[in-house]
Amino acid sequence: MMIIHLVRFFLGYVRFRVSGVFIERFLNLVSAKGIHLWGGIRKETDYSGYVLRSQYGLLHPIARKTGLHMQIEEKFGFPVWKKKHKGRIGFAIGMLIF
Image 1: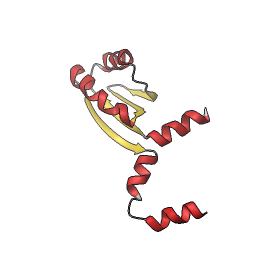
Image 2: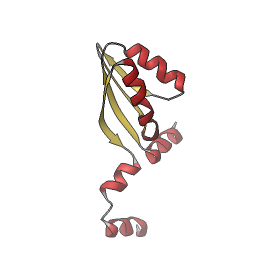
Image 3: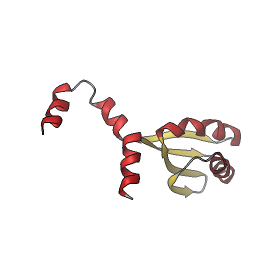
Image 4: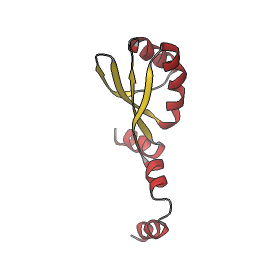
């Protein structure tokens, strides 16, 4: 289980939300495409879940096809951390020395 968390951290993942009427159809199409979602929470006409950063772009055509509105709530993982600390070379050298 720890390995899965490490892989997700290094690849990066996104918490997203879709809103609309046909959420079940959206989830069925996502499953048919082989996209792995986790941590899903359903609230009436909303669905929130997590997906790998590289697979997030594959969700847009499915959301458009089912007539749902989709948005990113938060981004996580090493790529986000790396972008945030891009200009801090001293910080990176200190981490390596430590």
